[in-house]
Length: 294
Image (tube, rainbow, N blue to C red; front, side, top):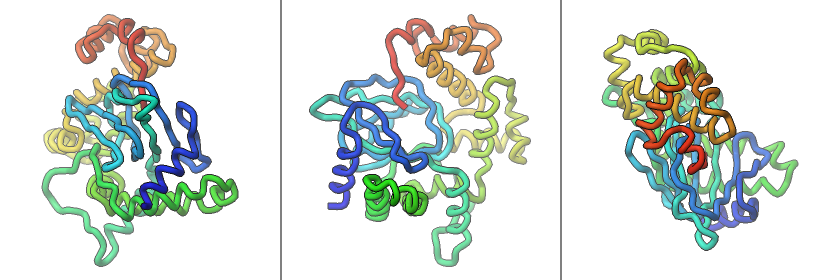
């Protein structure tokens, strides 16, 4: 019943095609009624919950398809391809996107990790992946419902929004994606920190040694842990982040040379070769046939 109420609130909050702000920081509703092919995008730390239709995200060749039975949780910036190939007027893609604010998520993750009897950080073993699907459990559904119930009243939104959003964060940290979220935002968040460092320097040369030194790891340990968390080697990840950011810039109107320079490519020809190798089209061909869905 609660999930049906969530669906009604989202449908009521966005009746036209597109993306709308809710007045709560980082919370957006979206509706898509036409098919959208998967195209390059960069997911920031975000949760995407669908109440109608289905969405796809592709990371390093692995496809994640999610609908109203699972929400997608991305706990660190990731180069993906995203789309809604089956959206239609009769089966629209309808849902909510919630940015995960670092300060609040970190506070909650550390509180959970240190609380007696609460969920504890796993010791040893491989790192959980930064992109995962999680069940809509009761705690997440109820927290999301309480958040969305504020939207018709600007005063309630302004006064209670941050507190209700914190409840949603807490439900995420305790749910199926909680292991990944706690490792990204709490103690042991070295890989997420390295990705944040990299994301701010996409237009500069960055080496594995530099990234490893930023988080106090040897090159070999950093390489292993990075691949556990992202499925890619550090250099594969750097290249994918640069090319996906460039593809989004081109879709936004930048010419190919400008986009290449802004993500650190000194040579347009090298950029075009690597772009075509990854996406199967030259940058100009791609820009004419694709639009990204974030």
